[in-house]
Image 1 (cartoon, protein in one colour):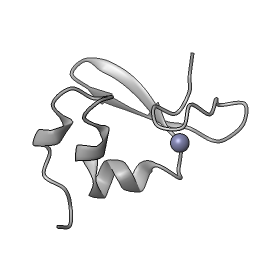
Image 2 (cartoon, protein in one colour):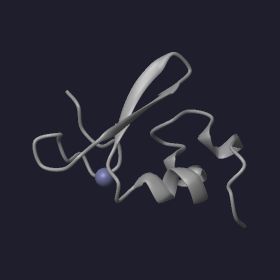
Image 3 (tube, rainbow, N blue to C red):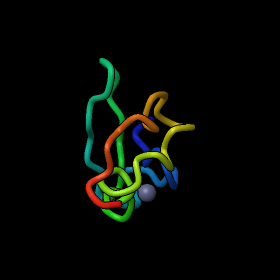
Image 4 (cartoon, rainbow, N blue to C red):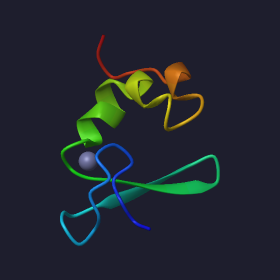
Length: 58
Ligand SMILES: [Zn+2]
C-alpha cells in the first residue's frame, strides 16, 4: 500500500514521493517531506535509526 509514512494518506488522495532507506522503499507526501529533511528524529518510530540522521537545521 502506497501511503505517506506520517499521515497515511494514500496516493489516491495526495501526490506521494518515494525514498529508499536500508533497502526498503517508503512513501511520503509533500506536506511531510520537511519533517524528513529538518526533523528526521521525529520519524525514528517509523524509520529505525532515523534518530541518528543529521537534520539540516538545529
Ligand atoms: Zn503525509
